[in-house]
Image 1 (cartoon, helix red, strand yellow):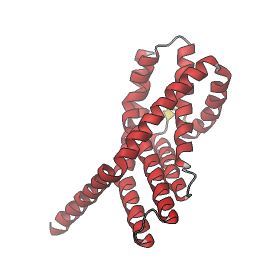
Image 2 (spheres, rainbow, N blue to C red):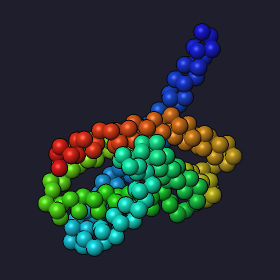
Image 3 (spheres, rainbow, N blue to C red):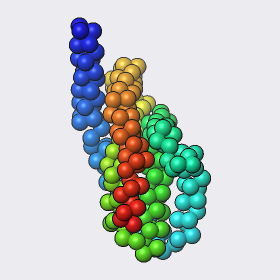
Image 4 (tube, rainbow, N blue to C red):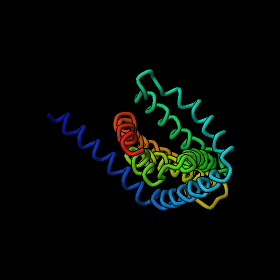
Length: 215
């Protein structure tokens, strides 16, 4: 019983620390990143509606990658989950490259796929709002939150490294980096992965049913 209490207390502490890190360090970056992602998605949707050839190329590349998570019976949620974890992790790890803010490129590529898909539905005469509500929001609430959070942490990591290199941050470099990496790792494990698990389950078992009834 004592061991169980210690485990529950430790887990609560980890989530509390993750929440504090998100609120005080990541939230401004997250909100800015989310706003930019939405803006880019809208602009690319409008662009692809006028230039469908580009959207077809993007969707062709996306379809080839999507096959890796498909089975004869549809989507394999474990494969989808691993694919989303990998993409989110890449967005964080790219933050180790200073000055370039490479996680933003991952964000733009995801926005491009969303824009291409919405443009395709629009050109086919489908109700884009219905597509968003039925095909994106059920799992997207969790998946987009996880992905944008990962990109935000990657951007924050890059900014921290840049501030240490340029001397803007005058703290102990080793201590600052250790704390930053610890906070990001904890948040990825406690928040990002659970969100992606929920998103993968919904996208596999719920979204297709809703989409078939609406579209």
